[in-house]
Figure 1 (spheres, one colour):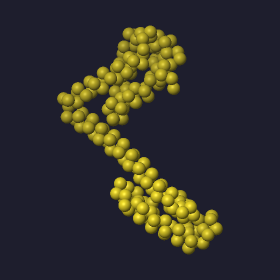
Figure 2 (cartoon, rainbow, N blue to C red):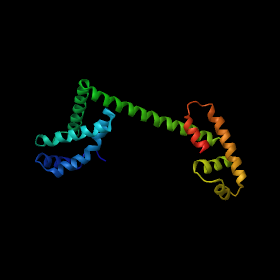
Figure 3 (tube, rainbow, N blue to C red):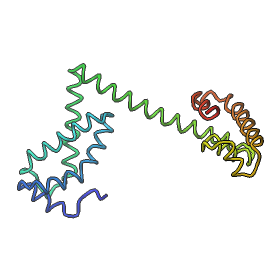
Figure 4 (cartoon, helix red, strand yellow):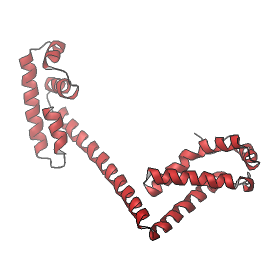
Length: 196
């Protein structure tokens, strides 16, 4: 999506005259960008959404003062920055707001850490699975990752169920040993894949 609308000047001229349809087009174009910026600053979806609404309330209240010849994008981002700064100033005087901002930052950090940890765990597990002999890897993948029964895999690959079971047991044993020496992999992930 382009940074500036093709007919932005005309839309701004219409909005300056009080055209609500033009305002709506401008809103839907810029709202996601402003929201993204506010979310990066505040790490809170609720606070970002609140300030986003305030940005466009201010724009509409001052629509008659808008100069279509100047950068509207810069104008919007300046309003968003000022509102965020005001919010942080208020936070200095409000324990409740400080707590809200802190909780949002902690949640953001925790979710980011969890996502990174999940990616690392998945990579470690996949590396271990890739180290299995081809047939054993295939059987393990079908049984443990795709959830197929031993009978289904037996029919699918044309091998006996006891051979399927043998592959699963040996693959599980190998993976347990491979991953046991890696304290960085989450125990729950290991249990999930090896014993489900």
